[in-house]
Length: 317
Image (cartoon, rainbow, N blue to C red):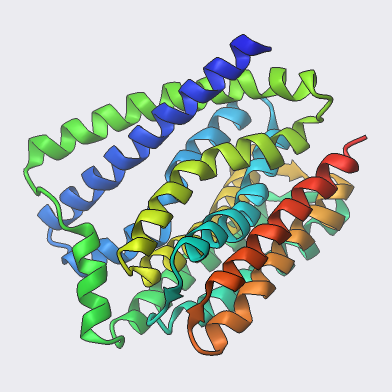
């Protein structure tokens, strides 16, 4: 058990380093190929932090542990809002100028509800998975168009997030390092997590929902707290909503496409997906009102997250 915990922690460290390396490499290569810093930054803000979680889920699927991957995908969405955003707002109130985030949050809620509906028969089919992937492409396209109408100050902040070296060899090396770190980091986590879960009586789905999802969220939480202290509320909330959209539409949809279908346990449809919806709904009034997430609201999100974890642990048997 202690050995498994050690490998799990080491895997988290490698994922964090690999995620940072691949984000910088992707940004540098995209700009070298002609993308503007704004376009590169938009994609990285929205989906860059999901890459380590995606690596974990691919490893889980490859090792025939789809329940672990399902738990991580949806548990990460709850952790994104409750833990990452809650902790960031508790440290420093977040002011959000990015008005396109409100409709994106609505799309996230609708996408989660659609996934619940499609999986209510116990299976998400390949055709349904393709539909989720197509929806993701459409959402990204519309979001990019809408964000171009935002204030110049916001566009500059997003562009600044992506600025890095555009040297070809530097970024190829970054990609190579990231590939190694993400592969071995995700492999360590997927191999160690079931042992940890079994040791404390958790089923694979709950193992993905709680220890794996929380563990992979910790580097994001640290980055969010740092961004909040610098006054980059748009970056923090953009990370949370974009990453959650990626998990629902790309990770779950991709699992169905690659595997031909993915089984949805009854509890996943009845409890876990609805929990992700509830956390999204908690965020919606904050983005529709004064576009400000206060310390009190951050504390509320954290308390709700801890209550969700307690509920999952109390009902795990």
